Length: 145
Figure (cartoon, rainbow, N blue to C red):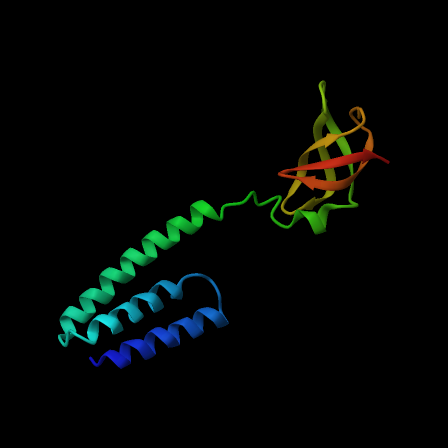
């Protein structure tokens, strides 16, 4: 296969990744581009397909697991800042200590969970109504309503 065909395929796969970004086709696009560069010096189709297969496997495996490890975020806190601030809930448990903390339940699940851990500047008892003022990591900061 001519080297330019690999480069065109790699570019086409990059365009697909840009139009539908799921971080899947990018690994195959990079593998096709690598194969295109190597194919400039090597003419054998079997060798080119082997290079493409191996580079696809390596790039996909390394890239996928690296992304999963380094981009892992707590699902509740990922976009919670915009969605949770201002929501009212009821304290279901309160811990003794500084800062005041415990768990708060919301009527409607927020980001997939209806019970969140909270921290507060003031003491809250079980049954108190509270409102979210900000998101701190995977917890919410609340104040009494």
